[in-house]
Amino acid sequence: MINLFPDNKKRQLIRDYRERRTIVGLVLLITLCLVGIILMTSFYVTLYMQAKSLENSLAINESEPAGLKLKDLRQVADETNRRSALVLEQPAFVLSDIISKILDESGNNIVINVFSVEEKITEEDDKQTVIFMSGIASRRSVLVDYVEKLKQDPMIKSVDSPVGNLIKEVDNDFSLTVVLKNL
Image 1 (cartoon, one colour):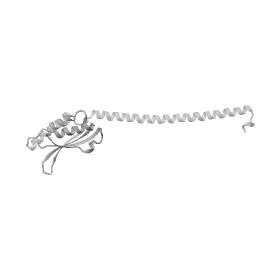
Image 2 (cartoon, one colour; image 1 turned 180 degrees about the vertical axis):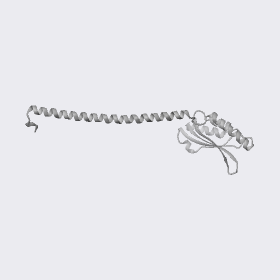
Image 3 (cartoon, one colour; image 1 turned 180 degrees about the horizontal axis):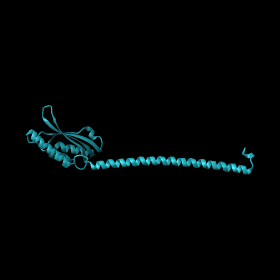
Image 4 (cartoon, rainbow, N blue to C red; image 1 turned 120 degrees about the vertical axis):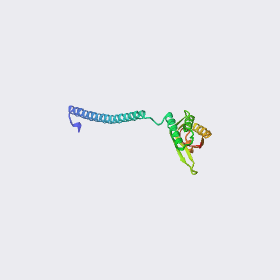
């Protein structure tokens, strides 16, 4: 049908077609750019808010003590010993020495995250001091050596280390139950 038009009209139609095609292409390109800008802006805002949230939680965690420090733990243990000695009117063994020894033997390759001391009454109506601890050992062999050192301590009756502590070779999460001898 275009063959029936004169030459100048044909050129005009081809030029108009190219202009329309260029305009449609530019509109699509601009739309694509705007959608990209909107998506990137929302992504940026989300990341910015998460970064601020993490900074705030880090600031809160740094301002609050992460737990009892070694000195605080020794002070609490000494205070507990003093009170229990007054109540029981018996000479109590120094729990802080045992705790210090347990923490000192852990060395640099073992990090203890949770440390709990409980006094339980056994079936024979004896009082038994039990220490629960968990943390991370850098290597399996370090954890095994640590457990062996604890078992050799004369103040410790038994050390319970579940088999699950030995699953991984490095960065072992562990939990131990240490039963102290009645002194």
